[in-house]
Length: 85
Image (cartoon, rainbow, N blue to C red):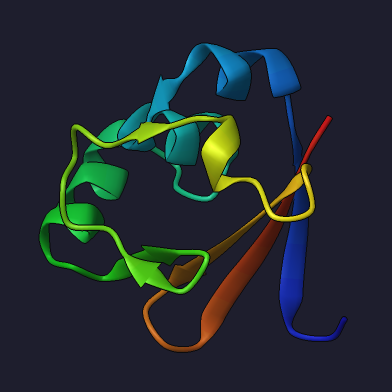
């Protein structure tokens, strides 16, 4: 896919449940947790096309598309495909 940056992420962290800010920083979508937190609080982020507005949101296995993917969008034009394995 063109225009989409791909990342890999550990399945164990998702199965255990990871808060959205830590997930975004660990997946290298944001360079820091502070930057991730600000973007979430400004409603500038969506996961699987659903707006994320709560920094306490836990990312777990129920978020996975086809059991192994997360589509993360920063703003309207920056998209990431995170493969969880």
